[in-house]
Every structure is written in C-alpha cells, then in structure tokens.
Length: 222
Image (tube, rainbow, N blue to C red):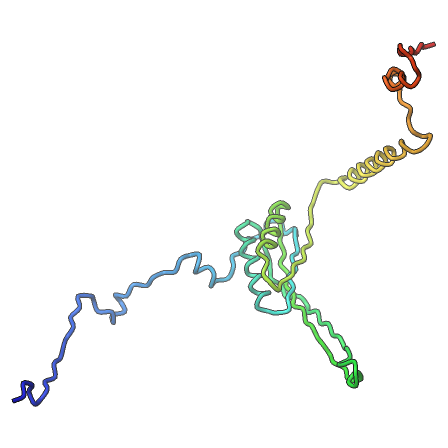
C-alpha cells in the first residue's frame, strides 16, 4: 500500500508584504546626488573679470584629445575655487610634424617610411588675477599634472612706473661692487688700509718674532 496519493496537489504559496506598492510613481522618492558628485557631470563654473586685464596664458599640449579635455576641465575648476576668472579652453591650431626615414639599412634602404605626429593644443586665460594666486594655481596644476599633457604658461605682472629704471640701477651698482671686490685683491692695486691697520700689523706677534723686537714699534705722526 502506497503512503503517497496518486495525484500530487499543487500548493500555491502567497507572500504578503507590509511595504507600500512600488509601482505608484507618485510615492517614489528620488534620491538626489551629492553636490560634489553632481558638479562633475556639469560644466565648470567660471567667475567674471572686472577689468579684463590678462594675467596668465596657460597652454596645454597633448597627442590625444581625452587627456587634454580632462585636464582642461580640471584646470578650470581649480581656477574657480581659487577665485580666478578663467576663460577657455580655446582650441589652438594643431602642430603637424612629419619625418621621412629609410625603411631599412640593407636591401630595403631605398624604400622610405613616413611618420607623422599631431600635437593638439588648448589655451586657458586668467584675467584680473593676483600674481600670488596665479603662482598657487600653477603649482597646484604641476603637482596634479595629468600624464600625457604638457603645460606652458606666460605670466604678466604690473607695477608702478619707473620700476625698470630702479632695477637697472640697482643691478649696475651690484655688478660694480662685485667687480671692485675682485679687483681689490689683484696685484699692486690692492688697498693698503688706514694707519690703524698698519700699526696693528706692525704690533702683531708674528711680525715681532720675525724681526726680533721685544717692544712693538710706534708710528709717529709728522
């Protein structure tokens, strides 16, 4: 006699949940991304220049577009958080270089092979920037420089009128002082010093021992 029934009964198990229905779109809660993460997907913020006086031109160079665009975006964001009005990046003309070399040194030396290298460039301009802040911005970019991207910066600093004349006169005086210091120890042009220096030299112990004097000689002024 079999203990199991001949026909298996289908048992339906229903699960009950106390959570609200997720299908209703009105009850769904949208989780906002953090501001720091959301700003990555947006364009970098920029500050407006008051006077429009250029302070720095930063030129970025690379052989690929992706690292160049990435580092340009990074430089603009760093300039915004440092309070520098930045403009760009402005695409510059490409630099195309070509080389033609022999393909081989044996029987294939008459066959030539061409190589080409294209350099992409972008320029970012800083206006109305403090020189110290511009130097801080450039040092920060050098510290976190992206691989495959080169940088070249032109900096302008402004000062009062007559600064160049003062710097030129100061440099000339410094050079003359250095020349006089060197020529003072050359041959007979060496300065002998004052009478006190001569008396100190004559009364020195080494001079007395060399001349066999017990008492230092005296210098009488006529």
